[in-house]
Image: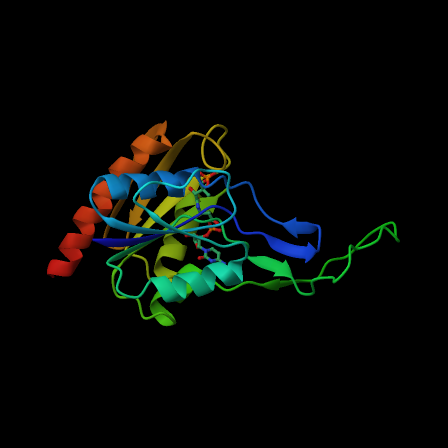
Length: 216
Ligand code: PMT
């Protein structure tokens, strides 16, 4: 199958030397890309700025901002059988990017932020993607409620819920533990394990489900 995966954080510039970002390392997305490639799938990895090496056999497209990730996904999702959105995309960016370094003139500094493009939310409605769509949800409270709401709102076939309030899993760690939410079945959890091992389980499940979807 042809699989598109997004990974890592985005960086939203504030001025020539500063940006807003988050703690995503890219490890989860890169582990998924490696596992999919090892299973013989053709993988395109759209990656935010991370310090992980290029994966042999995987086509990597590097981006920085949410807008660049949106444009890359819009271009690359065409003809894909599966799309997996594991990137931690900024929800807001500075409305104005200063041309020069912002000077320390006041006691406080107020930033005005504007919404970024919702890339996963655009997969069905804007990009017209009809393949198997997998989203992630990073939550610190009401994990299942928020994840299931995102799954329905964004038209996902599978939503992988990540409780990022737990120490040692989620952002920037070697291990993860997730709950899989499906539109027509009860959610179930995969236990805490190395992201590489978890990725192999996820890819096996996703490819099986994608084949089922395509045959109906
Ligand atoms: O990179 P690691 O350090 O290995 O950490 C892995 C991870 C914690 C980042 C990963 O497992 C994870 O949970 N990724 C989703 C992070 C996230 O931003 O979740 P969210 O609930 O804010 O977003 C929901 C979904 O919409 C995600 O699939 C996200 O990729 C997508 N999204 C979000 C905002 C946006 N503007 N566009 C999007 O496509």
